[in-house]
Length: 421
Image (cartoon, rainbow, N blue to C red; front, top):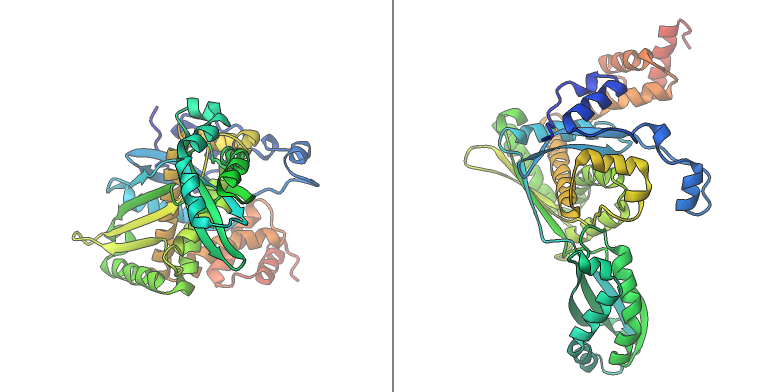
């Protein structure tokens, strides 16, 4: 059954009602989304060292997203208010114009093998390259299952890298990792190849590990956003100006890209993938030309609508790690309904673009704090001790008074309970 990601007034339902509505629209069960269905301390103790507990993060679902003609309901794990709502709203602004389009360069990762104490680095580089076929075959021998699935070693690159301690020989093994994030596969290959590569180079192997600069695994997303839904021509023009500012200035680019990562990291975390690896790759990509700049661009087209583009490395997988071990991550992947790591990466990047558009629109149209703080009021109400229906009532009174601070939340709560401070 095709997914319908358009669910009006989802936020007005209770948590249980939302789960039912989402299951109905996605054609998938939501078992695993209740905290009781997640990992316990015993499982946590098997996943990390010195485990003492489990830290919960709110899990929401972004609606309205269409990518490559298909609708997705997107799980997002994040503690920051306004992010899920903003992504859903921005996705709606592209929905009527066909949604977003995405493409990828493929699930390719790089393993690096560092060889030091090489007497003649340039000659050594040639010797390693001459053994290319032998090295690739040895790499494939380390993971026959990956090869059977259509992946495996694809290329060998060798660089003589000048450093403060002399010239090191650095070998890049380029590997198609299929539906895995790829760290385990490429690291195993690098470990196995290091002695032979050092022998060929006449040096000593040192580091052998994947690179999180996953620039062979790029996702490109673009979409057209309705000018009227954005707020009109002036808002479109101001978003373009804000985009140009982010492209030119690294101080603004850092915050601009943080808005992108609000969306990306939330989906990566919800699906049990490695947020640190993805974030490192994205920020490295932002500085690929020697200066840190914006990962996305916004332009105005001939119809007066806003066109957004985003290119990011996206090292995510559907097999291995927490994607299989964590029941909530498994439930999130079921909800998404993605069939391959490539498809998952495209959805993640699409969320990054709509999240970024939402932030730029808020900044250009009304300032970021208005909507953000209105949603933050609920968090402050809980911090002040509100429970049940009190939360909404305290938050509404704070917003109406324009005083969104915890001490005021305590004051309002005391007045509601007849016990003023």
